[in-house]
Image (cartoon, rainbow, N blue to C red; front, side, top):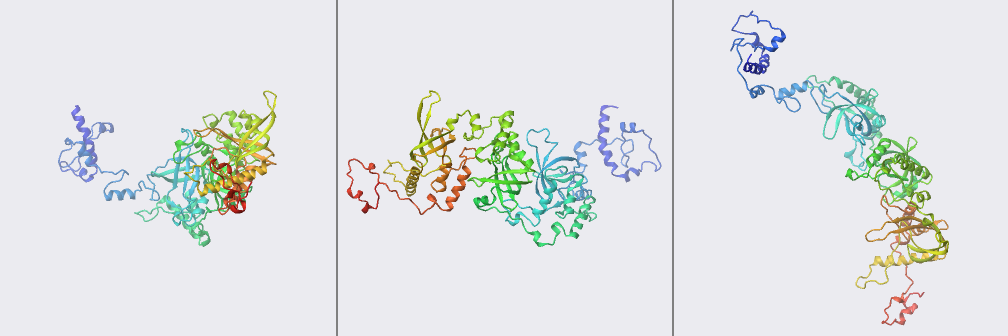
Length: 636
């Protein structure tokens, strides 16, 4: 057979398919007798020499005219992207056969039936979860891939969102109960899920746990309704959805879940979002409170719904994980994603026990979070995903936290093996002083107060023997209180063209008031001085140490804050601070409520001082300025 004939016969195949669609023309042939039989061919011979179907226009052995590819394609039915015909009849036939459909659209005859394995990370509602893919994550470094997954063919009530619970469009009756039912069944469990339909933001399908169909479990307990479509041909549910409709009918008959007639069960979930932080702390401090972790912001920062419906932001006491940034994950610190993943894996949407132990000035509480009896803070430190922070640590757990960090450091785990910049801890802890190669006499000593420079800085002298020369001597230290802001005294040489404002005058008066208070309290007294931290040098400021001064066991800075003579510094997350920082915050709040000292807007101290040294030499001082009974001023 020539090459040209081969090509002609190959092109005749589409024509053979087309003629096969016309069986009447194949059986009726006017050119031959009705009982005529075609010669027999074996299958192999028929495949090599295909014969065109006979018709009335040409004999059986005639060769069909050649057709170009465009003519052949034009004779085939056109399909859209979903594999359906474009004509109404073609689309109707495709639907009746049960083609690919989105959520709740009927028969899944052609849906993807491949099964995947996943771990339930979170449960957002009664029909929606977040999964960590297991197979796909085996080849990925770091935290696994997440899938937003919704159960198809059913619909649960909308669940409330934190911060928007009072808006009627964000939740429906039984939304919280439906979500809680599914959460208790699935959270933290390994499941098998089947994908039926995928959108750009969500995946639809079914989940099976230990052989139990989760859709049937939810519908059977009355926490969701079936939304699968009815067949257009039979006007009945598709066979695979019949069990769901049967379970829904039984749930309605039992009046359970969303079908309940008890009006009290329909009450919407209300969260307590607005409260006085310090009042709540007084109620909760040092108590073990049950709660549900609603969000994990970083490895050591969580949003928790307490059993009394108060929503609190908790930072772990004594633990600081690498900072994670939601807006731009690439700016997060090393191992921030890993630390957050560990906390999510163990805490997210799980019931925990919270021990509230402190507060800060940014509406956060400090506390210990326990899950199944384990301290998540210790787990993070042992894994090298957190750092021990002394000033927020609970004294009862300080040794355990420090030991956990030391183990990770010795093994150079994660943050300790990278270029992680640790929190600048206070050197007043002896163990940390040793690791920082700091001499003990440089971080703590006992001395006598000799001068009050201003409301926040004093001069202390110490008599001791020089360790290098062995000669006794007197050493002078200028010390500044840590973590507080004191009223500023105006400089004596003010610019006459820029007179002070009323607020500056008021602050100046308080500055002298506090300075005088410290003079009476401290001059000549023996105090214990402890170095808390050193502020690094900047372009405009020199390096400066900050201290805690203790008189008879009481922190002098804390006494100033209690009296309303000072306010507390708002430190950044990694800033070092006074070991009594939490007590300072509570004392400041109490002084504001008083109000005491500077917090009283109507109270300004009277300065009992006439500084004659400020008079210019060539201007004579009027005698009347010295007459106290006329000017109303007292002389010192």
